[in-house]
Length: 96
Image (cartoon, rainbow, N blue to C red; front, side, top):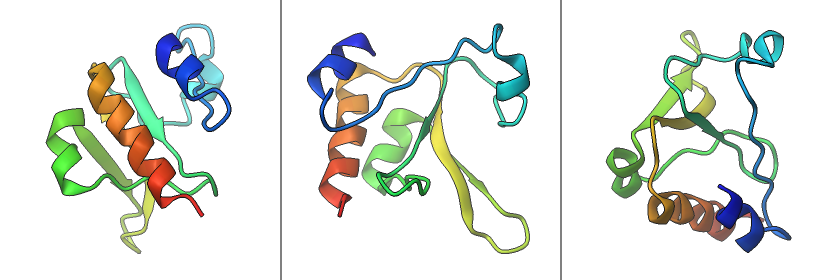
């Protein structure tokens, strides 16, 4: 994460949270596995992974049960550096 944070320092925000120290905050999110990564586009909307990345990053989508609207998009478990970089590049490519 530190390498990616430095590489993209002027274009993305990479924030890490220690779930053991921030239990009040993290209890608001569906964290089943550590690490869990959530991805947000520049406008704050959840990132929807393209199909070609989904299995590589173990993508999970959390949708509203009634509307089907994407509420959170992320990964569960370890994501390899190159795959996480691909997620960031996809997000930057789609930024307005």
